[in-house]
Image (cartoon, rainbow, N blue to C red; front, side, top):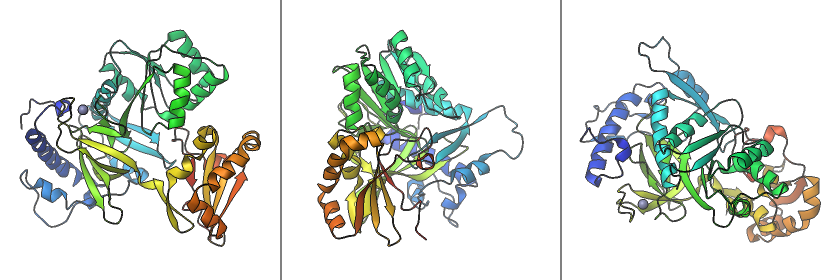
Length: 439
Ligand SMILES: [Zn+2]
């Protein structure tokens, strides 16, 4: 492999060079991760160490991991003795869709190195050097936004670092004064701002682009954003998770849900699910040393959109198509259903999805209960429509009639203990059956 090729340029090389790069990188990752206390158990015992020639075959013997126990993992990463080199480590955290905050650790250098790939993704999503970017950050104690600033600095744009997405009024004021042309945010971080702009009936047609990542942008939120920022506003997205790093980016030729892979940063495998006829994305990150990411499930169903790297944009990185979350599939009253049918209910009846939760619990008789958690004011306005909307789903109506599912019950908005962490992702549908097992 040509050592002069920067991994960030790995989507401009031939498939042959890319495969060679992946083989060398996997061998390096193997050598690091097999010594790491949190990943060593994934590796097979016995066989001789792989070589660059048989690493792909050997890699298939490494155990696929469901998830990390972040607390145990981070404890095993903390240095036991003072480091002899001047490299600094940094600990960061972000709330995931599980609602539990995930604490991660990396060297400062590799964290910034990963951020370069984020920057490339934001650039392909449409952010240019003449943009003024309203970077709508997290909320809570840990700060990870420095990665986004570093990423944006690679584009050369002007950055407005906005630290707390929950302050809708103050953030709207910053927007009014500084007139950004682009917004970078996690979709659920946009609700306080958009709610305030709606309340004051303010529009900003100078915003030409909204780039999101970390979770899908719902059709309802997209529509609300168009109303505030004008019908000419365009949308771009990147595909990333805190556990795996940034995974993919959109080019102008990507259809909805399609992403070029960051081939220089990650090694992906599509693991065929035997029963379901679909594949789950499994990722190894090639550039994390403190917490190696080794064959870790993403929880996303995907398929190849361009397995050969022949996109019309000219990049040679392969493309995947994200089909949905593994957790979207759930069993209700003994029948498998697509959770999206339930989580799209607010949109269908015109309730703002950040004001409502559909909660599934289990009662003493082991029956599933559907609760709709909503404040009294919205309940009195929308109760009938929500009830009718739910019962219009045939599987649910049948299960309720047969007594296998109880509901819908209208309850007060979810209390504090059931909220996700402050930086948690918006989830309309909450399945609490595993969290609250009935004794
Ligand atoms: Zn492309």
